Each structure stands twice: as structure tokens, then as C-alpha cells.
Image (tube, rainbow over all chains, first blue to last red; front, side, top):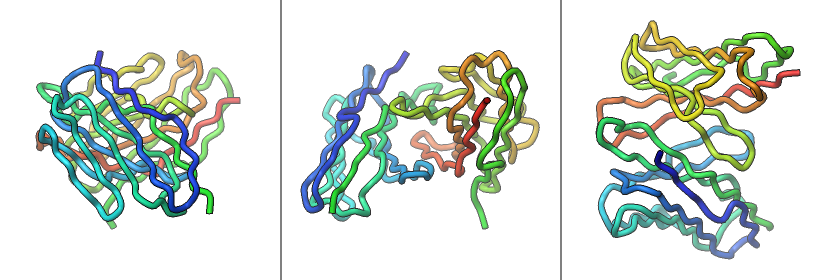
Length: 113
Length: 114
């Protein structure tokens, strides 16, 4: 079945440093989504990428979708303590299973003030 | 106030007992999902339903059962056959009508089996 791998599993940074998490799917995706889960909370949708090579920005967050639609990355510039949490990528294989997401293991981000 | 509700937030049960977790949404979404979250393993899909009275097994359905009798409700039963039921359970919903659908999550239920 489809697998989505995400690295690193943990990342500790000093406030102000940059952060990147990478996501790789075993199969070509229809779209990829990113979610953030704050400690003790539930996942909240951040963004969706659909097109090959797509790049989207949300303030200090930059999301990329690979040309082959099998990998993606999330980059945070100048981290803040509010960025703390677990970041998940989730792949949608499309076809008859559209809407069914396969989640990566997540990257737990800790930001030291 | 629209959204997804899960109850209770914390649940304790004795080993060998079945337990049912509640999930209700008033977003008028067709699709609903149940995930299990364990430390370091992300979210794993247990069951999902794309329409009322129909549901499919996800990746880890063994030891779980669901029903979808109403559009708003998708309860999950953790049976005694589930070997390691202690986990954080998340319910989600989506419109189910878009090819690029996004999911909205409830606050979760943390189940501890003693």
C-alpha cells in the first residue's frame, strides 16, 4: 500500500533559526496536504499542494511539491516559539480513494527561546 | 458553532471491555474518518465512510467496528479483540465531494485501558 515517510522525526532549534521537514511518498500523489498539531491539540489544516513543482508561501512558511509529485517540503524561516508542534504531511493518491489521506509520521518541532 | 465534537476527552476502561467513542459533526460533511495516533507513528486510518450507511476499512481496522446510520455521526467501538487499545483517537470529516478535499479534526479522545 501507499507509504509516506517524513523526516526528521524530531528537530530542536533556537528561536530565530530556520526549520525544514521533508516528506516522501512511495507513489505519485494527486495532492499533498500539510497539518500542524500543537501539543495536546488536534491536527489543523495548513495548506494543500496540487500541481507539479508548486510552491506556496504563508508568511514565514514555504511549502513545495516535487516535480514528480512524490515529495514535498515545509520550510519555516526564523522560527518563533509559536511554531512549536508536530507537522504532518498527508498524501492523497486520488483515483477512487480520493479524500483518503496517508499521513507521514510527523516532525516534532521544539523551539528554544 | 460549527465543528466536530468528540466525547469524552479522556476515557478509562478495564481490559476486555468494549468501549464506544463518539464523533458528531454539524458541518454537513459526507465523509468521516477515524484515526489512531501513537507516539512516533503519526496518524493511522482505522475506518472511513464516504456516505451514510457505507464505510470501508482503513489500514488498521482489526479490533474496531463502526457504524454510519446518520450523516452527522460516526461512532467507533474499540472491541476486546484490539490487542493494544490505549491511544489517542481522532475523528475527522471532509466534504467528500471534492477531488482535493481537506479534513477537519475533532479534539480527540484519549483512551486508556487498564
